[in-house]
Length: 344
Image (cartoon, rainbow, N blue to C red; front, side):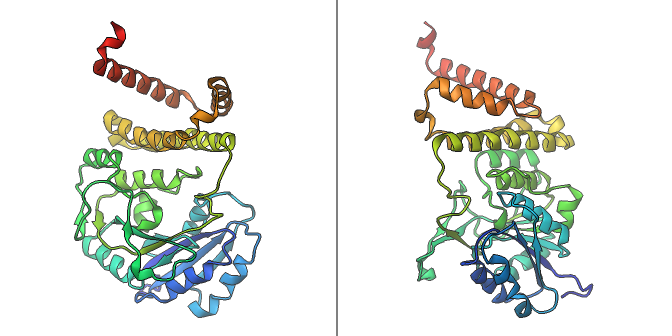
């Protein structure tokens, strides 16, 4: 621990029914070359022995370095547990971690040094390793990312031009996973940034807020995360068409409301409507991308019925309706410019 008896890093881990994996996750933390950190595991009302596995590691971490917080009810996602865990965090930096993933041995040593050297609000890793349960040889794993554009080859301080950052965000120049970042805790508090409690879009919105608010945002080439792809996780849950549609419509509606409220609370976005539009457009594109494979499962009438039911539950649909109407007009004008024969 540091001179103030507070840890350098608070590791926050949401957990639900991962008794098979959480031990490996905690082992990868115990193996860190940098040990000035605390671990806060928030159990989202697991129905298996996940909490007991975590309890068995308490002595290995020594003292009060490992905390287990038990939620009273299942939230169905990682946002609520993350926010609960954040309330218990005391470290200078926050590192969000998934209970079924692993981390490289020198991850905290590398990221902490970079954060201190740059006085960073956010240290952003651009790539990760993916592996599956049957993976034996981790040395053969190849770096992966959905981030577009040229990757950095050394720690690089991002521009302080927020408009440029939002344009890059719109062009998918940022890896959206919350667990790909080391974040200064006071920065999150000062900017009132929490993980949005909207399932499936929380990471994307959270990253957008970081990009929009951080003074010192640092990209690094370091690859520290081993991301486990497994059956049964929330990310890879298979859903039938209507459930899938309603699921993403809820994310679209709730996420838009959250994003618009957050952006409108910042003077920069109140004065820079184009930047706000690009941020919201990034979110809309992200959500609607998940509808593309299910459109053909519906007749127009059936799809219309589902949309009406979900939109009727929106708390404040005006902003979303206005945005969609504006985008329809933009796309229509674009088509007419490209195909003027359509109106001849």
